[in-house]
Image (tube, rainbow, N blue to C red; front, side, top):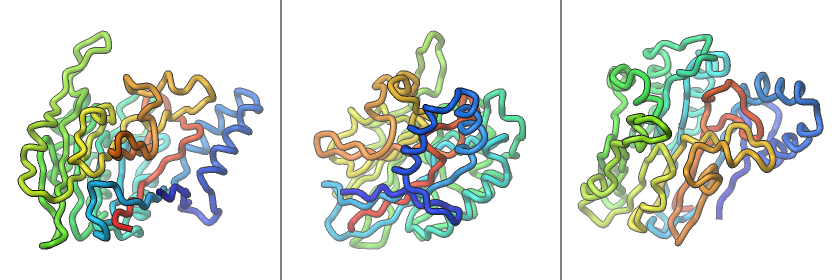
Length: 301
């Protein structure tokens, strides 16, 4: 149903199976060695993870390719200008019909020792052109840190931002709706409580034709409420768990559903969700078992 072989950016071929096998081997190493790998090696990798399938709500034979960029968290030590530029070059080479950006554009944790200016990361994202455009939504860290500056950077780069909006894309006979949800954790109320700015019913009410719908939602926790009318939901936020240590990692996935929507292609009641592992890091500059990735999705195969 899907092709999830990870395609590396560098010369050596690295598959996700090999990455996970390598992670398992790391568990046998000392804590110091494992920490060194998680902090200095894996965050600096980059893979392209392809998916190819036909969700029930997508018209048979209608081909569409999508590049998905999530959780950039631009800022050093693991998402410097060099990393951001390499990400953009890799995404450009995919030559997708559509590019979507799933939020959390700037590193805001205390370990972000090398800032990347707003105009630089936004300019690199703007280089990733596509026939159907590059479209963005906001994430929780965008809301928690300088959301006005994030909006301005995207606007200056001429990247349209969807906030509880739906747009009809594509030529006559091949149209589809792209819907972007407001963030579900926009306002921190304290003690693990949040108030979102998401409006799923209002967003989908803008869909005025029978054409297929693709939904962008930074956090995947909305998925149980997404109706079958939506062919595909795309999310980030979880970083795939970021540090995937056996047995304990689900407890650290930032989702009230634990590992249920942590990573990858999720199918429930014939509804489809893909969660990206993202690019940058949050809280600590380390990754283990889930390298930085760009998604390349092909529908109508």
